[in-house]
Length: 300
Image (cartoon, rainbow, N blue to C red; front, side, top):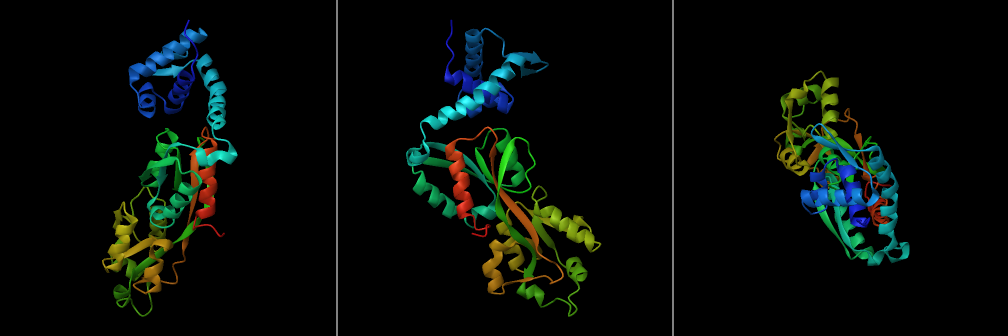
């Protein structure tokens, strides 16, 4: 008779979370046949079928779903057994973390320095990208933690607010010299290229709504996946941009960049640090706590 092993139980939970044997094999750095054998061994050990075929997919049986619900909390507690609250400095492992560009180029390096002090044995694999992509990777288990633009409405994720930034309409000082004396916003928006982060970002609908208010089409928006590239484009005088204040603070101070108009009030973009609801290990919680302490978006 086969024995019930932690590895096989962990495999079952990852299949349930990721939705397929193939995805679980990728997450656990093994092969699909190895995953299938673990499931077969577990079924033999407990004497019930855990999966049944539904079309081209393998779905959990009632007994399989029940076992996952009972097992996941046990696995979480087991991971915490070797990492007591007062011994996080001895924690080891690899954390896969997603970070947006706004965070990555502002205060994220301070967070990494802080985490290296409190948990020197933990290493990180960073994924820099757009919120929509990182949220999906977080939901399917390819990331352990992510710092995302809010709102996050996924029932699979736990999100902790970490503050926000002002989003501003900006132009170069050179372009400002061509501004009509009356400062007509519509005229300026019509006369110059408009730049914004690409459509999946939370800033894009802000730009679309502003243009709508001034009777302009959002089809005139030029986009880039890189916020920093838009900063450089706008600073060169090649257009008007909607940009986060932390990335342009120094250029505003030196007047290299200027506000398009006082009529365009700053819009607020909030951020959260998020993780899967099943990920309740102390290491994850410590990263959340340190993010709250370090975030430059918070009023400390």
